[in-house]
Length: 259
Length: 259
DNA sequence: CAGTAAAGGTTCATTATTTGAACCGTGTTA
DNA sequence: TAACACGGTTCAAATAATGAACCTTTACTG
Image (cartoon, rainbow over all chains, first blue to last red; front, side, top):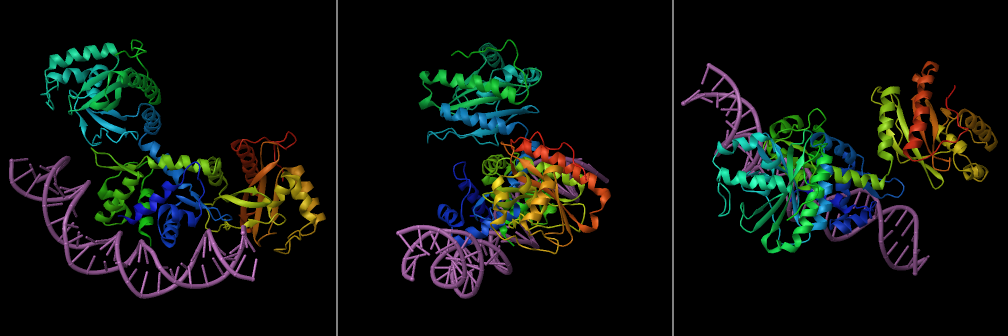
């Protein structure tokens, strides 16, 4: 256990309903010794992540948080707004969400929001490169992303992950045509057994998709009655996130998703 | 030396021009051992203050910064915007700035922005309660703050700090009348020898001052040729900060400050 | 295409820092 | 006025941080 991490965890005690806390209460809530809590608070205060009200002696989140947040936005512009929208959608749908971005010619996971509703959840390794032929996000990208992705289909061998993975370029192109008409894509265990994925595009400035937003559902919960809720969330996220990244939806893009 | 603080200090390596840094470079810049740097980064990453790009392996400020900044705004609304405006003004004037807020019936320092231009600077203890009869901020508050402050003048003995401190209620009232006409106040070493203060009000919703913005200048630099610059900054800060806190300037308040 | 340099990351014995029970002084409450 | 809870301090004991050397991969160069 790192000392630094224990110190940082104290910051999690603060919330909108509990914005100022005294030393003893912090010690109680964190389970730390009062002396330990105080020393950690002093360290955080020196850095500016904590501020003490000199009259009430209570502690609050400090000004350094604002400074760091500004730096964050420089390094990852737009991603924070996206995370918030995804968080809201997660609470509504109750399933994990993934935002993927196209970097060069690979699809990368940029934001993961895991469900807090279920203990059975789909956990994706954030460092994985998303295979373009086997996932809902990948197929969606083929349908709405830059055309060179479709052109490269024949050049590289498409890897097989499960029995239902599409590996034949012609089959993939057929599926992609359907996706372009529907506006959304799905993958029924074609990457990992038991995982159903649903994805919609996020468009950039020239009406070409720069990434996708997808919802991953364990097979047990992938019942047809839940599909309308999922597609509905996906559709509004597609629109909101496109706006969030300063993009524009093509006029031909469907305004409603149908099963 | 706290371990937690050393870990946090690594966050200071990031800047708008250096938003993503690799492990070796971080170790070099911070002077820490590579192993130590890595362990600290891992701790920060677990908390979310650091994020690693899985493909380039570089590190960036993480999403927790945004979360904490939001909490900060709940605890201290408006103060961050104020700090930024003060920072800009400090760079222009080259002197330290203080924002004071009225809490109950005492004047408290809420934000301090120290000058980075001079090594001779006025350093105020942020935990001090600002005496209302001896400082530019206090006198300014008397002039534009709630009327009960003026009414209480006779009730309590006014403390003396230096030879020029005003302690006689009648003398204070006289000075306050002048301040109300001018829009700004000054104190020439009446709190601490060698320190000249200049202050202007920050108004709240009902056109009553909720605090003040002040500039502290060491006597050596308090020459008459610098007064226009100081008053000019003070005047625009008074307006900007009033807007920042959602307040309104009285219509009778002067739009220009004259010596 | 071998050879080199620098990158990210790991290991483990040594070292130094963190830890917490008890304590102090102060203000508030019953 | 006694009891309590608060913020903060102390110092021996215990635990966690440290860093030199090492491994592996990647990228460049003669």
